[in-house]
Length: 400
Image (cartoon, rainbow, N blue to C red):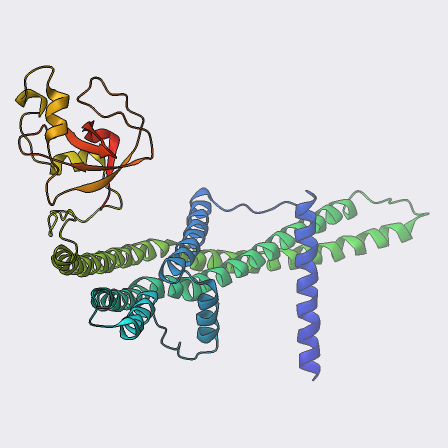
């Protein structure tokens, strides 16, 4: 019990000394031992690595699981060291609803058959998403968490210990400085007058006392300097290990990109197969609907750009060049739209017709367009009610 009390008192004294030294440094009343520039750069790089690793980790978690409630639940399971329950993906849930809807509305009807096909595709998409989340969590998120919860905690612990060693060192320096100043004052020329012998004795005693205090302070300073240098070297080695951490995170980043590429390739392949199935059945259900190529050379875009739409239309001389001058409008009125190949288009900008062979357009209106053999690929035939005329492709957004 006595030993514990002594240790407690010693620890309290050390803590008080460090607190005094830290406070005096903050108020500019004490000198502070500065670290070298290289060491400061290592500290700054370590802090930057830690901060950005946290941000990348959190945002990747948001990417893999957008639902914040689900993320909190998974976090609690991890902290409780329990297995996270299997969760149905959004694609799998949508597939389940579509399959149930098809069963209730009639699986033999055209709508029910289409629901079943889309449900199967969504189920495959959900399975691919599940595999991607699992792979990304193991190959990318786990190494980042390991660094933050393992290596970084060790670095932080050693940095705090280095900070305390630095406070002890500066406190010893301040104590030695005060002891030397007191010794110098005590060793000033004493009064040798016989009428004041007591002063001489007191001065000599004080000089010897401060001399012992200086020796003790110098010894403590040497011990503090040794401990500080040793701790600085340990911390430096840990900080230099950040380079290895960067190499490891780089490898994990490559694996994350590979898994993401595989996931999106699977999604594109599943949707392309679904598009083929729906395209083949759409022609039988809606014979007058425009059906494009069933296998595009590149992944389908979210919206069809005018230049892409123009490139997919057949080329050739314009309709106006096939008719005599002045009879273009008459020829267009006599042209009947094809039985198949028409589609809807949304007008992007207002367009004023240059002559009677063209159709004036208003932004955001919907018109029916189609192409004729031999037409210029930059133009289509547009219909709005009973009106018909040429329209430029660049002013249109072709709809499916």
